[in-house]
Length: 290
Length: 276
Image (cartoon, rainbow over all chains, first blue to last red; front, side, top):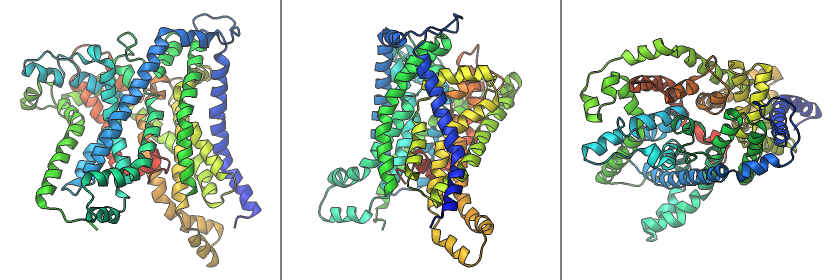
């Protein structure tokens, strides 16, 4: 039983964390919203007049905005497709009895721990470089024209790199979920004559549904903010071929010093992320009651 | 109960899984190989790379030309500093919520989590301007603060789930045996909480070590951790594959090893307890 005194002590113990997070949320957030209504460029000193929705209008009507939205969608969607399907297959495979399971699992998970700038640069140079990369060497060896990944299929290349980083995450989560499946249920189904496919479709997949949703939501939150991989490989190019929303906002705020425009973009990014966050929070909240 | 499986089927699964695992792991393996070659050999075709001589010279060259260990040290300070600072703030909070839950505890937890959903780029401008004004740009202290704040919800959340697994009956038993609050915390709770705290630290050091949005945008050269240092290889002059590989191997090796120990906690930490 919690007494009144222990309640007060508990409140005191929680307050530093709450105050810090409150400050971290409210101060920069309200500044972003405030800046987004100002004409404010660091290259043009002077007063920063209030301009209403002008920044939003410019940001949204700029052709690079629609390009960035499409790229963001393709990047997030492409990586999700690859990692979720690949993750399910990997999890099913790793769940089977085999020798050296521990070592195999460790090798599959390893890419998740590679920092984004390293994986971006390693794939760009050691693999996708048309002259010196492994793919280039292999293409030449069999007499084919090497693909220049970052000029011919730039967005697809980045989707590939990011998928390599996130496939281990999906695999690990789905494998964990799969291992909590009741084996007797599967055996009973097998004895009743259910084939492998129907066991997968009617027992495993429903059991995994929740974990799959969690993987999709959490990855979406992180994938919306992909930045380092683009910075070290293509700088958003060629043109705007690999510019996502995060990168576009980075360009307008830190490269063009347009604080007002960058902030307007920031507000849009926050709204987008929140749409996903609402669903994720609901799922996590439900679990908290259990 | 494990089902009986024929040896041949087991061998087939092992072969398929092993081959796929090798493909996933290959890029990491390959930079280890390239880091042990000369620059001239490192850009040859893979079969020529494997048959060429081995050398450690790239590791020395990375340190000599770019003061590698300064950046390594920055990473260590930023990753551990932010995690430990976060722990100091999170332990009391998680403790209170786990052992003295109130009506609003769940709301507070969910709200804390929601701060994690804020896309960093949404607050890039104000944080950047604030850092310029306070003089925190390109300082390790500034990054420790920012990374502590972005990881604080995860730390609190993980600790909360661990603390909740400590059975309340044990505390009651200790109290009945006449333990004071101090003894209760010191001899009963702490030993039970240490494994959970260790996993929390492990996962958060990994996350902070690999964080590559704030570290790239808020540092120039002085406080740049390895994420930012490696990014400087994106505009190279001349041959650099072997040196890039050596720098990369040293940057990911410690975290790879820590990561292997934290597989289970990774699931719990990154799904906020939604998948266990």
